[in-house]
Amino acid sequence: MPKSLPRDVELLYLEYNGWLRNWLRKRLGESADADDLAQDTFVRVIRSRQSVSELRQPLAYLATIANGLLVNRWRRQAVERAYAEALAAQPEALALSAEEQYLLIETLVEVDALLHGLGPRAREIFLLSQLDGLTYKQIAVQLGLSVDQVQKSMSKAFALCYASQYG
Figure 1 (cartoon, rainbow, N blue to C red):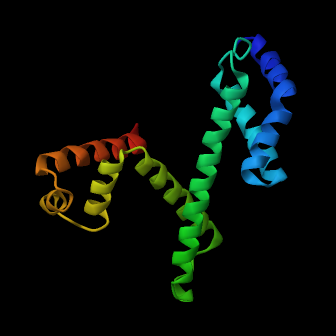
Figure 2 (tube, rainbow, N blue to C red):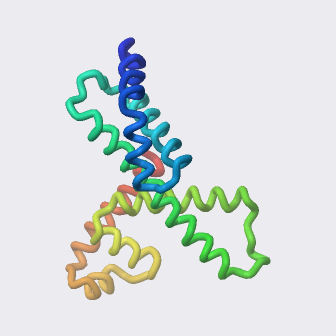
């Protein structure tokens, strides 16, 4: 890590942390969450190891990082809500421990992120195959595609799955 990096990040923090917290507060409406995400933003800046002293648009840089963190937060909340709704519909005998629930939610968040790494059509093809159990031919007919197009999309999806697991 360059010696100037910690000082550069410190100066960036001192100059723009207040602005970033206000920017996040407007989107979240909560001060504590905005403070946490602002802190996470600067942690990402540090981990990126990019020199920030020569940024031409530091506000845009920080907003881009913070926006990505917001999107991840909202996705996670959507997964948690969907899980809570599914759990509420289950009999109590199937209840999971707090640790099992946490691990399941973490897995669901990873799957959600993986699926968002696919294009919309490839994601739909993958879900039709893996969740609905449709054959490639059935998917092709339903979506008005060729079987070859479905196979190519599934190959991309499986490659992404493999890379996330073993890459």
